[in-house]
Structure formats: structure tokens, C-alpha cells
Amino acid sequence: MENAYKETMFILKKYNISASKSLGQNFLIDDNIIENIVEAANITKDDLVIEIGPGLGTLTARLLEKAKKVIAIELDNRMINILNDRFSLYENFELINEDVLKVDLKKLISKNKSQNVKVVANLPYYITTPIIMKLLEDKLEIQSITVMVQKEVAKRLTAKPGDKLSGAITYSVNYYCEPEEVVIVPNSSFIPEPEVESEVIKLNLRKEPPIQIKSEEIFFKLIKVSFMQRRKTLINGITNSGLMSKEECKEILDKLGLDERVRGENLNLDQFAQIANKI
Ligand code: SAM
Image (tube, rainbow, N blue to C red; front, side):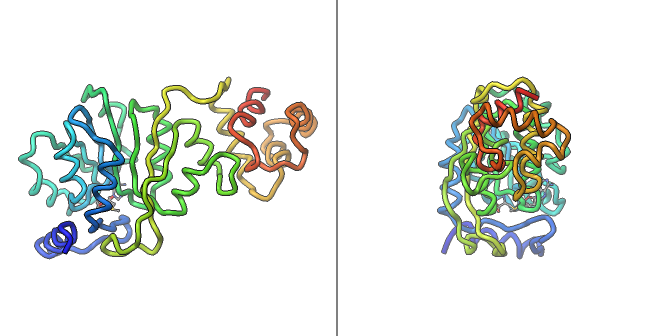
């Protein structure tokens, strides 16, 4: 029987607790998937790893073996007790009992003065997008984000801009990073089993954005309004938002050789950049 499974059952029984659905707790019990995550994250003894939602500490234990330091951020007090019991003697372990969305990650990273920072997590699915957007938009000095997410979200995050599966977040992710799919994870790899399929993905942060834009604010606003009503044409999305008049928009699309009936999801990153730069 799997070590992670035995460990999870033992801890849940010892502390007499069960998983909290509202906190998105689905504990990993699959040794192979844990190994897949650690391998994909490519952790070395120079790395500071930030783990979001360590839970019972199953993944944390492997990260502690590999990294120079692990900072784990966990909201659930019950988990804090368990993690302190398990890892307080580790010199390379730091635990923060807070909502990850409220943590000043920039400060945390600069305090630790590490050259290589990697984020690794089996994310709580109810806040996957806000967590990923925070990690990207805060412009942190991190190299990669290796995370377990819901499979459907994974497909959107790793889609190529302009693909059928792409949404507004696909463009943001591609602006900041080069995404890759790592492994699809069956529901039976968790206790309790989630209602949706999962996938591990890795986002490799870019040193420079792949396109030149004049204003990030306008660029991201343009993308947002272009996907607000998916079945509307790009012209309608843009003009309804007040970013440009219909005539101006038509003229730009014409210059870019795009059909008037084009939709947001048909454009690539560079085409969005060219429109944004004309606003
Ligand atoms: N890492 C563990 C594992 O793989 O078995 C647990 C993963 S579980 C999917 C998600 C974890 O995120 C839970 O431990 C949960 O308590 C924690 N969590 C939920 N919301 C959080 C938040 N806002 N900030 C920090 N941790 C959170």
C-alpha cells in the first residue's frame, strides 16, 4: 500500500479530523503523483520553495528533503498543529498561518534573499484563479509555479492564445509565462476524491514579456472586455466598454487584416498588443 495513503489515514485518525470541503481539502495519497510534482518542479538545494496549502504535509515532507528552505502558507488552524508537530525540528521549514491571498509575497521573498524561488502546490480549487493571478500580477521574483489544478482549468491555462480552449486568463498566463502540462491526475489519487478531474501544470516565468505593449493596464482591460461576452464580436466588446468608437475599431481591424466579425478568442497575443497600443 502507498506510503502517502497510510500516512494520511494515520494522521486523520490520530488528530480525529476530517477534510474541510469549504477549504478545498483533497489530500494527495498517490506516491507517484507526489514524485511527478517534485520532479517537474526541479528543486535543488539552492531553492526557496513556497508551498501554498500544505495540508497534512505529505508533499511538504518531500519538498523539505529537496529544497534549501520551504515556506508553507496554510489557512486551516488544525493543519498548523499537525505541521508544527511534524516539521518544527526542521531548520529549513517556516510556516505561515494565513490566507495566501493576504500574504505580502514580495516582502516574504525579499526577506529571504533567495536567488531561486519556486512555488509548488496542490491548490485549493475554489481559489485557483485568484491565487495564480496574484502570483503573476504581483511580479514576484519567481522562476516557476508547479501546481495541481482542476483539469478543465489546466487546459485553459496551458492553451495557446487563439486556440478553441483559450479564455482571458490564457492570454495573461502567456504574457507572463510559458506554460506546460505535466500529468493528468485521476480522482482516486486524493482523499476525499474531488468531483472533478485534476492535472499538474508548470508555469515557467518569462524574464521579458513576448510582446511590446505601451500600457499593461489597457492591454489587460482590452482582453477582459473582449472575453466578457464570449459570443459577441470583438468590435462589440470593445465599443460597449467605451475603449474605442466603432469606427476607430473597424479601422484598426482593417489595418491588421482582421475581419469585422472576428471574436476575441480568434486573436493571438501580438494582435491584442497591436490593438491595445492604438488605444
Ligand atoms: N498539500 C496538501 C496535499 O497535497 O495533500 C493539501 C492540498 S488541499 C487540495 C488544499 C490546501 O489549501 C488545504 O490544506 C487547505 O486548508 C489550504 N487552503 C485553503 N484555502 C487557503 C487559503 N486561502 N490560504 C492558504 N491555504 C489555504
